[in-house]
Amino acid sequence: MKASIVTIGDEILIGQINDTNSVWISRQLTALGVHIFEMTSISDSKDHIVATLDRLMGKVDVVLMTGGLGPTKDDLTKEVLNEYFEGKLVMNQEVLGTIETFFSKRGRTMIESNRRQALVPDTCVPLTNNHGTAPGMWFTREGTHVISMPGVPYEMKPMLLEQVIPAMAEQLGLPELAHKTVMTHGVPESYLAEMIREWENGLPECMKLAYLPRPGIVRLRLTVMGKSTEEAGRLLDEKIGALHQVIPEHIFGYDDMPLEQAIGVLMKEKEMTLSTAESCTGGNIARLITSIPGSSDYFRGSVIAYSNDMKVRALSVDPVLIEDHGAVSREVVEAMASGVLGMTDTDVSMATSGIAGPGGGTEDKPVGLVWIAVACGNKIISREFRFGGHRALVIEQASIMAMGLLRKLLAGIDDGGLK
Image 1 (spheres, one colour):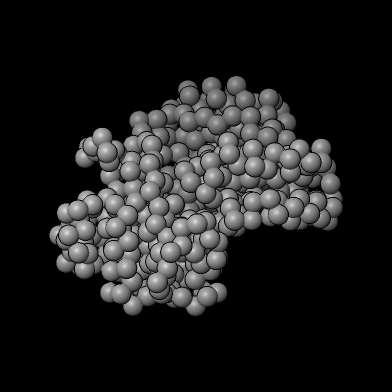
Image 2 (tube, rainbow, N blue to C red):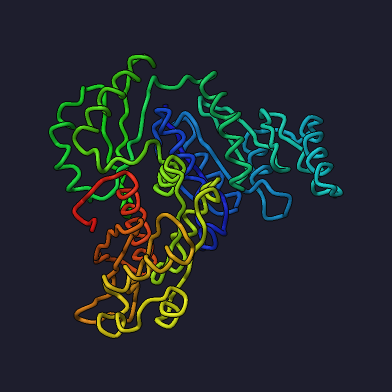
């Protein structure tokens, strides 16, 4: 099955917002074995929408469109699709009832523009929107299914998962396919490929491996094609089990589990508490940790000690250490980790100190230099890293590496840094 993803909105083209919808939809469909023919963003104009449909009609099986379904004048998608598929806008009572319920639950009064959203082309199958007021629409012509959904992510996502994908499976049939993603940390993609080369060469022909890297993380996606669900599951379990024998220290989870969630699982299993002391990461590690539901069970708090004065006053770092070694040093970051550990009375802590840039670097301590420490009682792991890229990327990489060091400590993986 071949699909195209089209996002509609001038705000995307001028860079006012990011097109996260296309990436998310692509992931959902790719996981089901659907081939993504293209992803494109177009303007809120009749000519652009029509030209895009003309180009794709009869060439792909499915066109998934998002955006342009709101109640304002610049939202043209419904009217353009109605004309393109030679329909007539009619008041759909079921859609109207859904919109009325939406407003009633929120104690708000409907206005005429909201009511008009229940006007739906009579040439489409309406899709219920339980999280907003714009219904989706499903048209078919020349063997191509055109599915229009709202552009608001929290409205579009449940519509795709709960209505569109089940209908695609029933009406169009989806390829027989199974997949699983192995999450790895602590080794770059090229090195990882060399480490698992023999294992990869032993994969059966029905199984494909894709490397999906991002800062500090490499996802290994295994896909099995043309096998029954039971057979595919057996093959995946067998090969992933063998992979564990090759890189046990680098695997932390499956199926896009973030590192912060894996840490949360370990913290709860061990019934331990956590705190952070952050300088160059500016609270980003604490943000990641607290993004996981239930993190209040183990996370106690964070000190953002950005200045040297704060390191001394809030974390009890000896000023002589800063004077002798500099704020970005093993000695200072270990003192920060120990300081927050004692201050918060937690079991483990993480600390960072570095030069995120773009300025502030020297020949001895360049931009991208970051020291990270993780403390647990009298044990400390501390490491020096030299990250590349812009400021935000340095912060992201430092945050990931800090959590990676914590995972090693919690999992009992000794990389030579325990002392």
